[in-house]
Amino acid sequence: MRRYLLLFSAFSLFLSVQSCKSYEPAGAVAVSNSGGPVQNLYFSSTENDYLYKTQIEIYGNNLSGILIIKKISDETHRVVMTTDFGNKMLDFEISDTDFKVNYLVPDLDRKVVKKFLEKDFRVLLKEKHAVSHTFEDSEHQIFSSENPEQRNYLYYSKTDGLLKKIVFTENGKGRLNFLFDGKSAIFADSITLIHKDFRLKIQLKRMDTEID
Image (cartoon, rainbow, N blue to C red; front, top):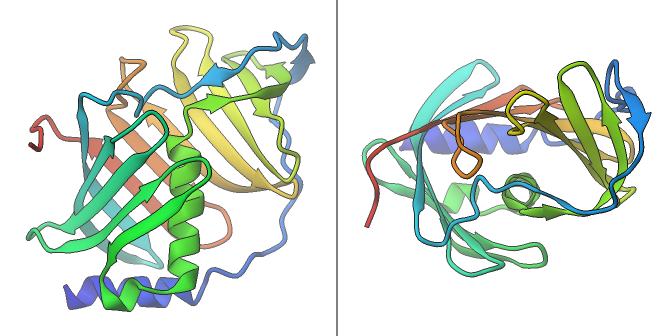
């Protein structure tokens, strides 16, 4: 448990924003906008618990745990993470407009860590995205959200129609990639989060066992 706390504490020191090239979908061309919203349905069911084995790579260090995500109402998800030994590390509820921390281990109970959790999981769990622009490349239809300061680019496969990637941009800069793999539109088998501003990578692998 102490190792987890030391790594997350060190991580909080590296959360300063760095400059990078303005984001544009590589190799994509603009096409007519359909006008309607697009959806990320991977965490849309209120009947299922979403249970993932979690691997975190942070500045050359590796740690693991279990992440449980539950949609507890039409607008809100609850997120809990434990160590492999069952010790709770974090517990919070999040929607498009609210973020409520139920528990953080003391060494993680910092403003910068809460900001990181709120921003990343709000992007991951957001279900409906209003569309301002539409693009396509050889493999994807790409939809950008309408918020100019924090715009999301959602990549849907032309082959199976599934959401394959979300790129989160802030002030025009690519900050975070979410990569999805699976065969179902409502449950991703694996999810990878890659930060562009610092050396943090989170891999989620679906676990078959459900939590009561």
